[in-house]
Image (cartoon, rainbow, N blue to C red; front, side):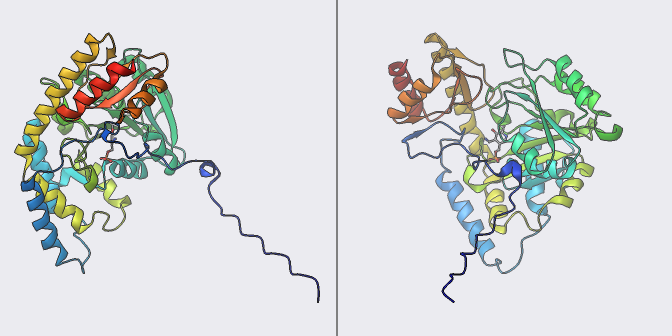
Length: 376
Ligand code: PMP
């Protein structure tokens, strides 16, 4: 038979239509000398921390034929003790704690447990750009309200929207990314009050206070951990990626009432936190005093940078985090590009005209200042 068999057509993958034209999410990872773009801690772990981690990983390595402790009780206990010390609260134990591979995964667990088809997650823009991704991936509807022009959240506006949308989950970063602004506790408490019955079918709305940057807050700014005991529908998320300088280890965690934690235990993958990750996190938690001294110097560096930006006649949002949103530029991309040409990577996020710079080492900040002076 001279007829050629038709070339079999490659099967079309049944990718979800809403994903079909999406790009993988993430800030560009460029090879640039001064990285001030993703709010990392500029200081690598000290030799003492590296030594503790290496010893802990070696111990864990001997047991790698076994699956890890799926409940990671030792880590949860250590995280509870750290939070008590950091925030001055009492009464936290392992049952109040949860952890996963970055607070990103903690928040995915929250949406897996409390979001879903027919449910809504709500936040207030400008805000952390990952939130709508968790919503999409869990088939949760996404609504973004607005902050005021000065980036504060008007509680009356927030409450009106919560009443209207009846979200299962409200995501409130404090300090917020990209603005660096923390939410006053009375605002959080007013939202928590409405949230007692504002969720689906008269249930509560889970209010997530994303405190990824909490350790950098200025003196006198309280953490929502201080009101956790009174609010079974409050979840406070934290991370080891920022203040701890452990972004590469991927450890985020959450404190909440034990019943809320139990809901997350249902949706996690079995053994989601590897034995290596658990060992690394526990080892680092043995060095918190040293790490917190470093945080204090980053805070000073941040405040000095904010003053410098303002002296240059730029807007700089008062920050409780390890970054500053600054501007406003008529062409922010041009400024971003000139900084990049000078070897400094910052981030184009937030409303048009603004750029976000992470607080680096004194040397990095000096290089940023020199480059920015040239760029504007
Ligand atoms: N929340 C906020 C507000 C963030 O800015 C980040 C990191 N950029 C995260 C959560 C997630 O951090 P990680 O997954 O590294 O804990």
